[in-house]
Image (cartoon, rainbow over all chains, first blue to last red; front, side):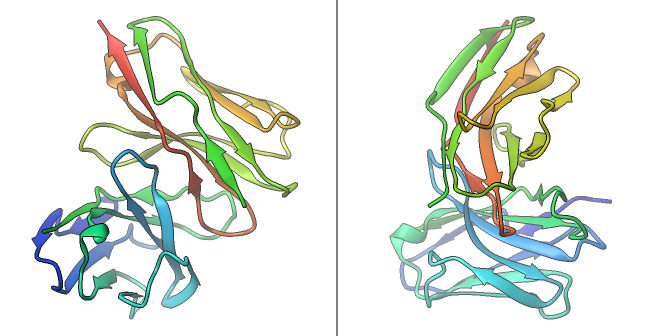
Length: 115
Length: 113
């Protein structure tokens, strides 16, 4: 068990560019979550998957954001036409998903800076 | 709307002393879960302790314990015998009827040697 991993750890991009982040959950975890954390705030929920199905999306997830988990393993989060307001830490978490009390285990995050 | 409020942006404690971090939440749900997560500087968030709302007994995990007051919608975290490694951002979080966690803004804890 190597924990949740995220790549890249840091991304600097220019406004208007597209970026993609990857999350590898803990093996055998069938639930995967994306959160966004801005400076001085707690994480905010974006979306979550059970296996390959995207079951819930926040209103924060605008049309420029898309998340996938094609084979129920790793997930990608893409942001199109980035804006300066997208600068944040993007956190991924996973859980076993068998009980409502299952712990969400977080990855180290990808810090996005949009210039 | 479900909200979580942490009224203490920063707290400090002397090593080996006890500190209590406050958290209140707003909900109309009867069945929910509460969590405290720790986020050390430049490191990933880890779960410290959790409490099921239907349980009257306060959760404890070694030096960490909670004071859960359901009627007051209060969920404070007590850290006993504070250690330097306890220095971190602490987030209170809530979950009900959904898989998403709702977090407070966090409390930055400093432990002084």
